[in-house]
Length: 82
Image (cartoon, rainbow, N blue to C red; front, side):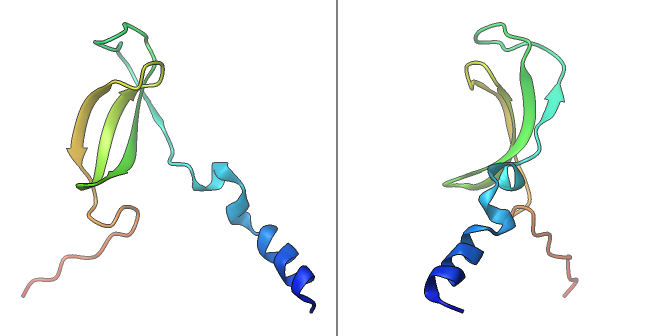
């Protein structure tokens, strides 16, 4: 396999579709306290403080709520009693 063919195979992977990597946004009833839009969604975000589940306005991106989520995001480590 040539280098160009190998590069083409890497670029054709499923990770090149941005929708495959995007978090699933769950619609939330209510309206934004900042702009009044009825466009709230709940989804996970990664910040400097770790993973959080947020409810954000999809119009102005105001955060309505922010709660700690799984420490490793989508990777859930089983709890071990020591």
